[in-house]
Image (cartoon, rainbow, N blue to C red; front, top):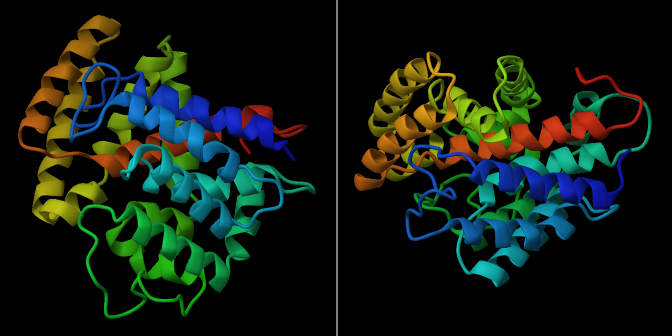
Length: 287
């Protein structure tokens, strides 16, 4: 079990680390984009952290309160996917009892109920993410009729954030942690590790944010271009050269307004999990 202050610091640090790399198509400290700048995301993380990490709060309560605080601070949707991913991780880290982060997360996800779904639905409606339409079944603008786990299972085939809820965060604990470990082993610093982590997600999955806004074909197109860029980055060890390549692709994506936001959300969650794995007491790094 980790105290709220530690979890909050780890969350804000993960959000800041994600902004320190020139992730193609996203907002970062090297370039604004999509009507937002890095400061909006830092302010959002700081506003959300106390609610995301509130002792004793349910996952749903953490999600809604964090999004409500974010909206009050920046008046736009900067972090819905981040909060949906990180709230269960924070809750799991604060669970008492034996087990590593992944085991505790499994227990957190298994206990999600209709109240969690109702609060998460309210948060999603408040954030009003791009591409959010009406649904004939389990519309987020109506009271929840199923638990949050069931709702996420229904959304999982089309949304990579929801997919984490039904796979025990497999992408985060497997691809994410493996990519972080591999980058560190080759001597990459923090921002370069983050860039490789983002590219790992963006090059393997059609980005859900792009798919909602522009369609699945556009998401697959970006994924293919990401794979080409990731392959080139694998041959580069010098950070300035790697960042120059990433920024070149960044300008292309922003010109056509393609924002792989879900890949960035997964990046924050993987960085957050990495920090939690390092601070959970008496638990080895493999969770």
